[in-house]
Length: 502
Image (cartoon, rainbow, N blue to C red):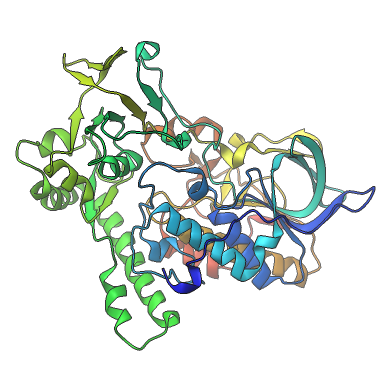
């Protein structure tokens, strides 16, 4: 990291704004969540609408969201940082797949640089919000350090991510109570967990599991990744070669960063589109890069060849092939099987094998939670968000003056988060220019419904019934294509026929 970001911010400074004595505080824009999305949203609002009052409410005691919450060994991004970083603030390193500490430092440094750290109010849990049509404002119910609090705002922005911060997904494992060792979920990693010299089994095959394996290998006696089904895994350079090359040239980051970023954007979009259109060829390419890195005796077909096509579920990447190196060194292994039962000393598999374990890590996925569990209502009537339709992947039909940030599932989260921020800034400017106070997407009943996300991943499928719908055509379709969204979100006219202004 560059010297300007080397000193970590604490991320725990309270906003200096205070509730007026005997009254209810009102802000123009209220942002829920102080993670990557919320900090970015506040920065874009400060730049585009410096005169507007803004507050960021964070339920936890620190900023950073995911990157402060997750503390398991090796936690890192599975997207390259030149697209995961903000478009308007260069990522200050050559590291492509950065660890959680570097990302947290980056987010907090940006917040400090832009002055939005002073807008964040910690230990403020938003419970619900009711839209008053007559007053054209939201009344927001909040719990602050266990005490009820009310605020009002003209525009509400959910930057809560899409998973439950309180608990991850853990299946019911037969015999779990019999196991004499320790069972840990990565979302709640104990700070004092000592795994040195221990036998560890990691249940799962997604991004968390393939991060834990090489990070813990070498310290443990042995670590095993137990997967029910394989995942597509590709090695990727830990540093971006173009960034390294440009570093040798007398060019400022304002010039080089967009070039590297767009190179990676085009690579992401092209590889996804080609994989979806030519899955057989995509499988062959993945095999060509992965199979030579496996140690002798480890079968690619058994452990690294899923039954589904690439991008039916997320494709995982490993920096510099660290997962495969741990396998080659004999410090780690992969077992593809199903669990019969936990017992006193480990896990009995349906094949008859037994995995001895002192520690079992259940890297079994996230539990999705729409808008952080925020309950929305309209003039006192509860809004069932599962019956609403997503507008451009950033607003909801029938919900006035409300936006939300949810990133891509096939590319970097921040690519979409930046676009949402640009859109909200444009939308608020349009309201100002025309003397308007409210905007709401109006659903076209002729538009067919589709699931909100089309990934077959278990964590998505388990939550679809609680998520909004998307439509079968624009602007109701939730596109997973950054290039298309640049046109439709950044450049299309703001007052299209799907929006009603008042």
